[in-house]
Image 1 (cartoon, chains in turn green, red):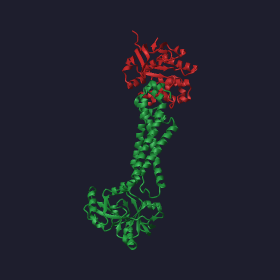
Image 2 (tube, one colour):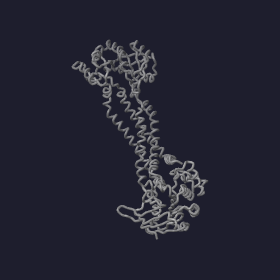
Image 3 (cartoon, helix red, strand yellow):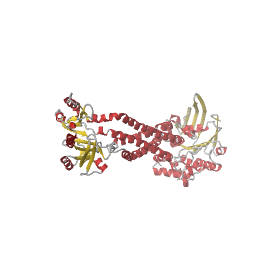
Image 4 (cartoon, chains in turn green, brown):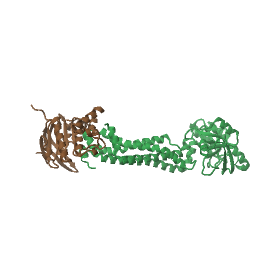
Length: 386
Length: 225
């Protein structure tokens, strides 16, 4: 008989109570991890930002376009390494609930500036040769079972009319934070048709992406770029890619903050669940602890028995919670309309915080019963009637 | 020159604080008990006999006076020293047995042996011997709920003797038992005293139990009479 055996037997003494506590901790950890994952998903764009990329957009709003002619002038700014651009196409594929980003891009430069979009060379060459070719993310390909050579028909809204694309490439994201569900196609294909059908919108692009040599020069370069077009008909606003992505989140910042707070409130709830169990358990065993102390068991050994009990419950609860989190996150993502969160994954930090929270809660929950048991005199404990 | 007493209690006082009131429980107790004695303490409820037993067993601290057991003055020991001393010198027999319900009889008896440097195998062997001494070798894998009151008390006695302490303290050991079981437990204590030379201090209300002791001390209102 070892002390560990006594610890385990005590933990299993009230199986239903222990099971419910483990289950309660598990649900709370899962809720914590799920909320944190949603917060992570909101910040996916920010996380994917590169420190050496700047975004130049219209100074008034992102929805206004910029002249394509700005590209050469931006490229002349000292410190600028490469300039590419993109236009938001929008449109409807199959139905309007099927959301994914659709961008008209400069095929010569876009993939240089965004090396995180990985495309096979053969597919890329085929894409470049064909004007209405498209490269789609692996997630789009899987979602719609699209293969190389398949046609994609889009109903334009920002650019009205029927648009036909041929899938010539499927890119894979280099990192977990890279959006795997973007559709990329030739700007020239868009611009040629716009010139015919909407000539007043020809030669306009959505935003420039500026790759710079030194990230610590971003402020100076941004200022230089914006100075180039000051007092023009289309003034620019240049900022880091991170700041640009964060500006999209500002509207939802209250919701994100609330989710963040809620996730940590849940940790507090776990603490209460385990602490309640531990207080009940220790109170019931007041007499036994007094007997153990009378037999000569030291404070350290009593500490081991009480905190061990608490840690076991919180550990198994956390493990259960984290285990359930993976299918829960999967289910949550499936339940959402497609494309809401193109990047949706459980960060290792979330798992680590979940584990750490479980252990911390286990230790904290043991404090009250420990203090009570250790400060109760043996004779009082022996007289205790629960 | 005779052997020095195993237990020497001198000018012992004990009082409890209840709010602003100081309630005296023991007053000026002087007592000597030799090794191998079997002493019963009797007296009405509230006379302080259990308190005296607790003080001698080292689970309570006196307000004044000294308790010297085998040349160790208990009042000099701190909490952890006292715990170690108890584990080596005292075996406890309680009125309500106080076995751990989630452990078998064997495991309950093995419990105090965890505090010794014995190996796992040695601990088990010692526990089996102790259970044999109390006649419960056949029931070693039973849980307390599967035993009768008398058997539970015998397991508790086995636990008390497992570490081979010099002193056994028994607080109303037959108080919760029927007549037959009480006799069995008293027989066993008698054997432990006679055959293994254990010093036994027993608190009891029962004159038949007290009659099994070699000597009886009476307490009244916190004083030995």
